[in-house]
Image (cartoon, rainbow, N blue to C red):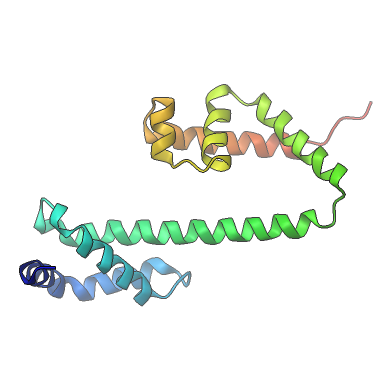
Length: 166
């Protein structure tokens, strides 16, 4: 770490510290401590500092990093809650009932349009990022996000439909 880099970083950070702190306090919504968010953001920003082209946009650079950190943190928490609830729920099921649920899921996935199904499988099951799914599907990230949203909505409808008994 060069002293020059530290000095330049701090000369940009000090004047915007209060605004950045208010931003972090407003964004966390009690999901994490705002000081932790600030600290993680500053560490990442310092590591990527040399890649900034426009030093006038430093505050927005920090905003973007903090939003991504918070988003990733929230996503991990949601995944952990979902995983925990699935594990707790599955303990009350027999293996046959669990297999039926999995079979229902695959049937419902089979009814989705191909691109939505592929996006859901790549993102939700295989763990690819939206950017990676976009490359695989040769589409924009916005298109992938729309496919995921529409696919989830349709999948929820298909899985909550009550079978018609004649």
